[in-house]
Length: 304
Image (cartoon, rainbow, N blue to C red; front, side, top):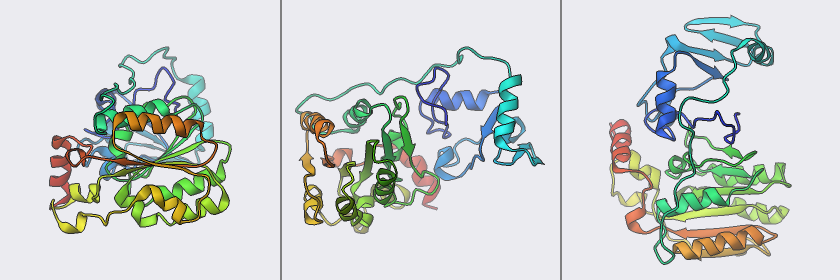
């Protein structure tokens, strides 16, 4: 993985959902596209098939092979190929395309939480060396625009977008790396599917920071299929009380509705020595963090 603090980092390619958009333009206009590791061009990875990389201009470096066009060269180990490229490839001091920037801050203290206010504050909350786990729901799109500090690892599964993945993944990541701070961002629909893992977090005394977005619906399902169905509505939970009900002790748990409350909760979470659970109340007008253009494109792709 290329650290996003590197001066030549341009962003994330995902077709028309590339973040920033200039990263998509750079990939699609490049003379040569060097793919390190197998690149799976499926589904959300390429913006719902909105833009595919030209195979004629793509060279893929796999674990033990190199693919050029339709031709495979086997018994080529990835470390050896990368070392050879590093020795022979021309040096580029600085990327010619614009570098991604921090998401701009928005929202006044007493405003309800909006996507424009939420994600820039999550971005600035991250610190060097954190783990960020993002659910495969509608929050994965704006989270892809977050510019990560040095050494931050991003865990996501946009290829399958299997909702409910993030909560148990947060458990696993935090158990595997107890000295690093693990932060989860998940919608409430996905979280309900696997929330029982919170009890396991309490049992083993791990200290993640869980940010749960309460919009009362299966948000990504509402985009993928016909909208407005009652089966996309969720049973209402008092999410911030769930950790205590599952036996978690000394957690900082709160529910926030305004920008000021969210900022205060983040500050408390930063200084709290144990686990934290932030329930973010999303207004009905903000139930989808995606633009209408993106929603309509996704709906047309998957509702057939």
